[in-house]
Length: 470
Image 1 (cartoon, rainbow, N blue to C red):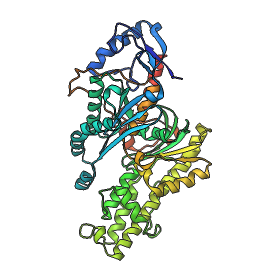
Image 2: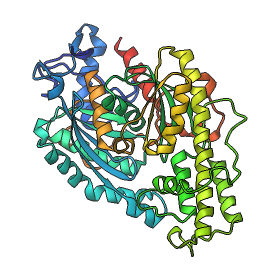
Image 3: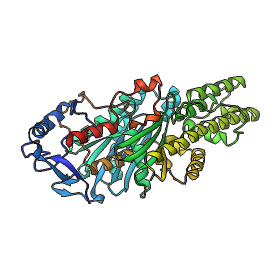
Image 4: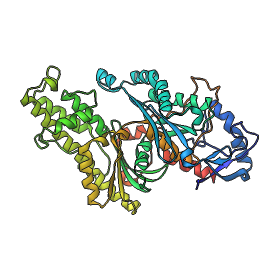
């Protein structure tokens, strides 16, 4: 059965709205700055004026309406576009979870060249391939834009220069082909993709989202409704993996994480004494800056010269030393995750006693050692560990498309942008965008966290929208 939602009906509106029901406001726009895009103001203003003057026109409707008919799951088709950081991704997914296509273009060579992500270079790389990636995704699915139900795109968090490339492409397609749009939260997409691969996964569940730029522990209560139990107060685990791999002279072309995990198999995880971060803090937040400093000092104390002796040229003795450092770092870095997850399970169960799953997603979730260690934590609490396949853990278009489907079913989408929208027009980008509201016991006094929150969280935005609807 299609989910019921509230919508505005007015035959005097934009052609897209004539004779149809559609959500009267964007799910992620606040009441104050609703539809700041000029084209959307033209489209939505009549809706808002009618809403304010006559609440009786707000009626429940089936939000999957297409030409007045409900769209069956297998006919709901959404294109997802992802450009939040250094991977250009596009995918086509159906409402019943069938992946029709997935295309990803990596920037691994740029990462090696610049020693990390260079926002300007990453933006240019996205711009060079975005058209080809989207076209390939549609061709591989044997579809054209006319076959799509909507377009979903990551609008944050991420690098604003990179987000801009994907959002512009999505708006161009949606405007030209009169398609609704769904703005997607990158971290929510990492969490919800588990519901694509694990059909039995139901809300509520606990999720650990770990990547190069994020460490996040959330209680997922429903689509768009999250409680943040913990986050990183400085560096994320993926960034720590990458830096350590670079300092050890590893081949970064396939990523620092995989390279370090492979080398760690040769080492003794207890050979180098490293302290587990934040032992004195009884919360669920993370910190990896101090661990990075410990590793750097350990490397310097062993006189490892990676500039003159990369791992491929290292002697047997030197390689073993580097392997010991890699293994010791990995043990402590993941032990930090284990301790935080252990406490987060207790907190989550105090809020939602019915949770029975821990979802682990994000690029670092591809790490086999991470999965093994976290499986021990879930078994301790009689939970189930749910991890998407590695291809869906790293940034990709599938997770964006699927999150778009989850929101679209609930009526959380925007009308199509105007085809006359200027290329340099204002775009709703959210480079710093919190996912859920912070659990009281999980609050941190870290200055970096205080500065980071620019936009209202996704959860609070949806709550404001619901209150305005009622």
